[in-house]
Length: 351
Image 1 (tube, one colour):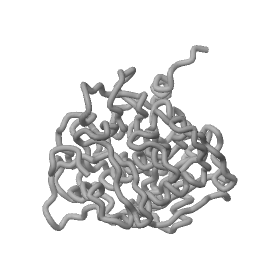
Image 2 (cartoon, rainbow, N blue to C red; image 1 turned 180 degrees about the vertical axis):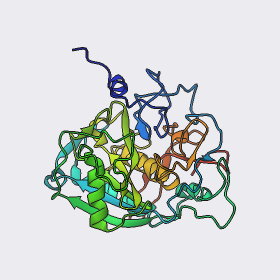
Image 3 (cartoon, rainbow, N blue to C red; image 1 turned 90 degrees about the vertical axis):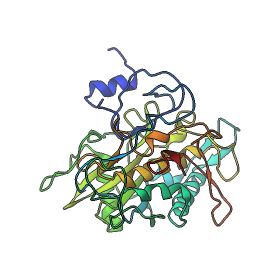
Image 4 (cartoon, rainbow, N blue to C red; image 1 turned 30 degrees about the vertical axis):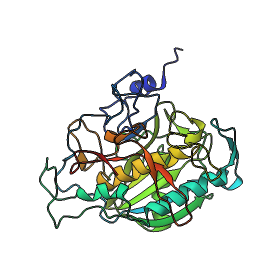
């Protein structure tokens, strides 16, 4: 049996489609120019070469893609820590400082970040409010009166799900490139993430496209290609007559260099540094779902090459134009690393 790199295995499975929502790093060489749509590429996975710091793709504007495609006008963010492992806990050792961080710190950092961006009208998330639904296809701006994302979104709550079937070491996720529940049909039983998103929708009783279920996987659980090829992705699953958005968030500390650990900060006792990648990656997915929540059935805002607002500004070196940086502090004095987001009105990466 010939073992192939992860990206080649994805291609053999029929999952290598034109790049749409990959998070593109800023340095390195490319083995291939396509990964599964809506996957945030790891730093080791370079789908587009760069000559230096700057947007991952051309500075072309985002275009409204599909007639009547929605944005999340009133997004609600729900955290789902899936699996009893989160309850039992574990320790991680930082490759930057050799500090020991219990998993409870990761939960606190992640929850604090989502609460902060859901309670404060940040300049970072303000970039999403220029995009709307209901304009003409190929529009680059929105007149007043059209629904837009709100700044801030709403914090819907957190669920430590220890009752559902626990995620296995490797999760089946064969619906990453398509909608997993057709009207009047059934969910593809092999898609565990979409099934968990539907359980979360039932738990929180929000079954609309304005919901984004952030599914946090515990240590040592991944989907095919995670960490080696990508850090996370956002997707959709049909739920009754509407669709819900969900985010696959692997435990990226298992790949600290590839998914942004210490990308902005050195380690702190709170978790800055080791958990930089969590807020960068989650922020990327939150903002992309706000402006393109139904990527398969009703694509909303992307540029001419298929990139979303997060893709065009991903992994830009901190301290350079459009680079990653901290936002905050929150009410407890904590800051969080984020990437910038593409702004049509600014003509570049902002926030």
